Every structure is written in structure tokens, then in C-alpha cells.
Image 1 (cartoon, rainbow, N blue to C red):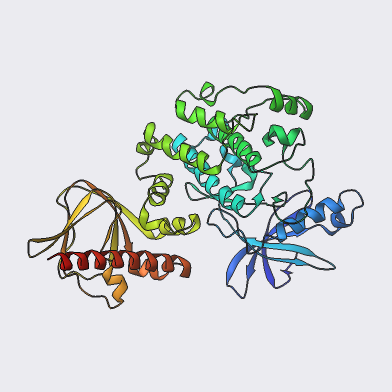
Image 2 (image 1 turned 45 degrees about the vertical axis):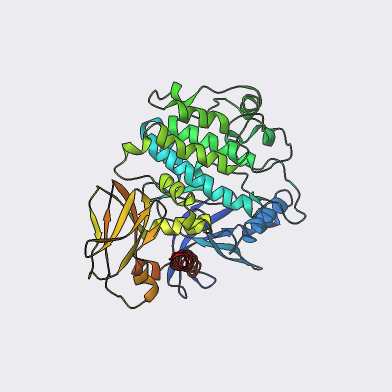
Length: 425
């Protein structure tokens, strides 16, 4: 048993594959647990498969520090040595989606839609950086918590930049797209197809194509239409059936053209079929779509919006609910996701705010913990996004910068409006 891999202290072995083994280690400098994947040296030197193994290692290692997204496993470091070559990655405790692909262990439909939605956002992020995964399958999607996911193993990825040539035969046959089977040029739509297969399997516990050998399997992928997921699980709504069918279209012209289009339909499924009502809380996919549609968050990247979700608290309030009171400590601010609120001072109306506007932000901007100077009350049933200043203080620099810019924009608008009113008097 290894005691150290470079500077990393080995805790235990996590698993192994055909070309590598993975260890749980401790980074003594960063004081965190990491996963370290060691590539077998004999495979690197093998005359037949060595060049491919080396290519996969270099591809994954080249992504160190680049795919920074909350739903992608982060690659921290890569080392190529005479005796040992390894990649240091974020450690995710929770296992892969494989255990939820059996008919007896299926997740609720709303959880599946939620997981696939997060996958679409992560893969869209990768696509915008010129990266196509090419090996999307349940074993390469890690689950942490109820629906938080991390996509891993970008060794087979195709890069849009550089002089990389497309290597045939990479990927797992059951999840390959028709164009992958036929060894045609690939783009992000091959990942869309593969994710459609993953969604099918998570919904039904069955792969869309059943075959006794790879030749039969590849023929079906290229030529046969699979049964709809609802034929295995009757409670699957028509909208979800349609999403899977469109993601798995054999003709790329009929398949989803973009990850955004795929994500949109998944978010819509929650609303049209009340999938979100089957959960106690508002789904992350619906929260994300709400944030993405608000002007306040227009300059936030996807990764920054997921960070906002992590630090925010969402509340549904009835009409005439007091949110803030004159004299209260100003330790949080709010953004109105739905409804209307009124701002009053000694029962005198100062302002009415509607969906998309923020209030209580002066406490954050002043940085002195000033007391509230007015009352804020809902005028209708409303949904608020509450963010505590101490939580935002712990957010990333870029996320705080986005909030500062958004607040400054609002202050400029309000000052301009005030000046207009004064000059018109």
C-alpha cells in the first residue's frame, strides 16, 4: 500500500480501472481531501495501447484549472514523472449514478429531471470552452446530496482548440450517439444524445437498446427507435417522454441544437406537469431559471448563479407579511422573485417594488451594519430571495463583484429617476 503520492498522503484506495487506480489522499498544504488517479506505467509503455492511454492522460491533465464549474469535478494538478504519472482531482463523496439505474432503485421523476438539468448546464459550460466530453454515462456522473452532481473523467474529451485529431472508438457503446457509432465528425450534440440515454436509464432502469453483443447494439443505435420511457414507467409525463425522445434523435437536425434548448425544456417540464409540486421545496432547476431570467443577474455566469443558489434562502410569503422593520439590524438583503412589496416610513408610502427589484441592500453596501430606516411589507403573495451579508462575504470575489456592479447599476437608476423628478418640479 502506498503511503504517499508525491506530496499527497494516501488515506485509502477508492478503486481501479483498466489503465489507472484512484486513491483518496490528503493535501497537507491545502488541508483538504483529494482524489488522485495514477496511470499504470506499464500501460503508458505498452506498444499497442500506450499512445492512446497517454493521449487520454494528457487530455484530462490539460484541463487542470480550466473547467471551474460547481457541477464539474475540478482538476487541481497533474504530474508526469519517470516512475509515476497522476492527476489530482476534487474528491466527491457520494458515488456515481450507476446505483440508480436499476429498476428497483429508481429516483423520483422530479429528481431525475433536476439531475439532468444540472448536467446540461455543466456540459454547456464545457462546450463554451470548446470541450466535448464524448463519454457521458452514469459512471462518469457523481452524485452528492439529493440532486447535486459533478461530471468527471474528461479523458476522452474532444477539444475545439489545437491540432487534436478525433480518435475513433472512444466512449461506452451503450451511450454512444449514432454519429459516434458511424465514426462521423462529432460536436456537442453527441453529448446531448448520450445524456438522453442516461436520462432514459435513470427514468426506467433500462437501457433504450437491448442487445447480446456490440454489433447488434450499434445496429440498433443507428437504425431502431427505442420505446418511450413511459412504456416502462407509466407515471412519466408526456413532456418528459418528449424531452428524452428529442435528445436521442438519430438525425442531428431533429435533436436539440443547443444545451440551452435542452435545459429550457427540462425547466418547463417542472411547470407544465407540476413536477416541482412533488417536492417540499422549489427545485434548483426552477430557481436557476428564475435567476437567469432576471435583469439583476444578467451579467452573472452560470457558475456564479449556482453560487448564488448556494448562499440564498427562498421564501414564499403571503400578502401583508412584514419582511423588514424600521430599526431592525440590517444583516440581510432581498431580491423579489415574484409579487410586489411596499416601502413605508411611519405609515407613509415611499415606494412600491415589483418582481426583479432588490431591497435592503444599503446595509450590505454601507458595511457598517446600519439599522433599517423603513418598513417593507408584501402587497401580494410573493417569493423573495434572501441573502445574508455574512454569507455573501464568504462567496467568491467574482460573485461579490457581480453583486456590487448590479447594486451600483440600481443606485444609478434611482439617482437618475430622483434627479428627473426634481427637475420636473
